[in-house]
Image (cartoon, rainbow, N blue to C red; front, side):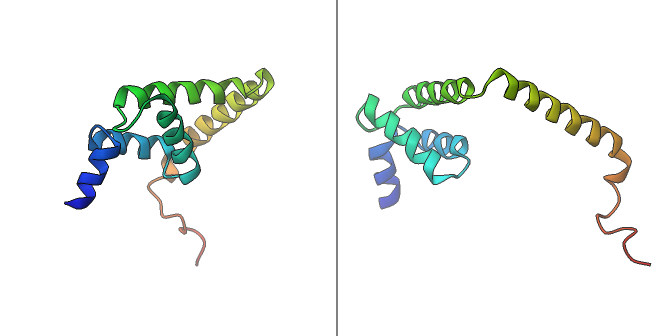
Length: 102
């Protein structure tokens, strides 16, 4: 119960904490970056609105860091991945080790 009280002091509700964790991917560095940016904008308890604003700002910074050439390369990689998955649809039902042993 004490933990829930501490969470309530930092976040407006548990869903805001869940969102922060989900967006960070469980990566402590990303979580702390987002948390710090929220704390720069408002005092606890941190609101979901503030968190969403910080997420959008961080996303835009990451997007701007990728050059046009890198976007083209990422697009090609994504297309190759889609084709690979399409061609391997029949293989998905087989065991990953099928055919390896006599």
